[in-house]
Length: 501
Ligand SMILES: *[C@@H]1O[C@H](CO)[C@@H](O)[C@H](O)[C@H]1NC(C)=O
Ligand SMILES: *[C@@H]1O[C@H](CO)[C@@H](O)[C@H](O)[C@H]1NC(C)=O
Image 1: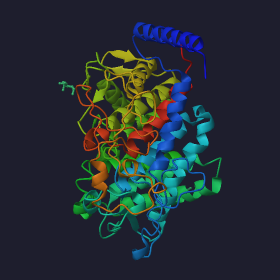
Image 2: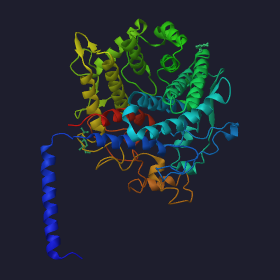
Image 3: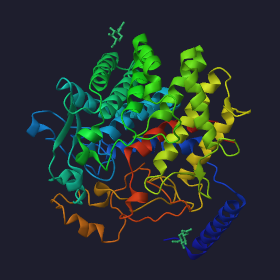
Image 4: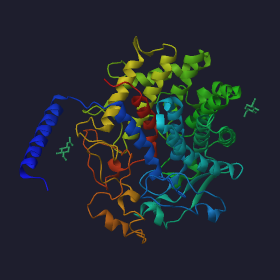
């Protein structure tokens, strides 16, 4: 027991300390994150993917509240579709967003892996969890790609932990008869981009991924059509391909060209680009629309090698970037009063993280040859792009009007009631008895914070007035998704390697 006098002086010290902190907080106009903060956020952003895992969990699983799930996925169809990721707060494995997530995780490693330090291995593991699954989905049956496990309408009617799932694990596929060039070409992109991630660390696996990418792209290209037509009631409105399949064909060919160096893909891009959206300007890069990403990716060919064939893509990449930068003639983007890019009320941060990633990637490519962005008569340097990207990253991490982080488990204040079945129900290890489909809603209505912290999850985010309600039923704002996190991994790696002032 401490004496009274000691505890009095301790209290005085605490008070002093508190006053000092308080005053310095008030002098500080904005949050100043350090490289260590970005590195911590990077680590968490990758850790998030462990919470989304389907299949048999390894012994080194760090999101320890999760257990094995979906161990017989595919079995009633005589295919092994165990593994992969749940897309968001539910328990369905959707192929299109899973593939896009994988492409963006791989692209993050390709551009910014050299800044990831001790996280590079975790990033590769997160990619491999998905590519192992995509390989099964792509190579098991010729001219067939398995694109979904679980039926969304039935899954969404239950509030169940993945470990307890008892809703139908229906398997859906695209084939020569029922094409799905969008999901197939995105899968090709994911496999090709990932093959580049493993070139040095696992060359055998890398070749396997590239071969599968080539085959699935060939399938996507030969049997053209959108999976939203072939599997309409299954994939719509959840991950309906609103932009069609052309953007994915160009994107998939671009990644295979990059991964294989085979000129026949360059010829494909040259002869089909105009038909596949090379001339369209589109301002939001997402699991649906690959056009802005393709423009940025192919610009590198122009900037690095001055290949005339790709000049078109540099011009459109410039248009895209100009549309985001206030003050340029082409400026079109909308920002909240607090400064975050705003497109829509549901899951808006997916556009913030994907845009941030493209800004930083383009800044890097421009830097390769001293290039600049042409916006009408003005030229923007890469610094301008980095500055905008930093404002978006900092907003997500807590520099915003709500003074809260939108990454779970990062900072002092973050969402505690995320729309996520596994996170909001007691862990299977704490409560081994089954929690049934309907009974889960009972927990949901208790009004207490989620018992399991899904560390690293970035939620849908605030509305256009920077308001956020930390409410489990408000899925538009409080649901995380793998494709919100994936591009953020690259952005955080970039800032973790910048000197902080
Ligand atoms: C390049 O790709 C085409 C189309 O997939 C293929 O037919 C050809 O054999 C490949 N060339 C090489 C050198 O691998
Ligand atoms: C933001 O949320 C607060 C608290 O819920 C509310 O009072 C305010 O009206 C909201 N502002 C806008 C612009 O919606």
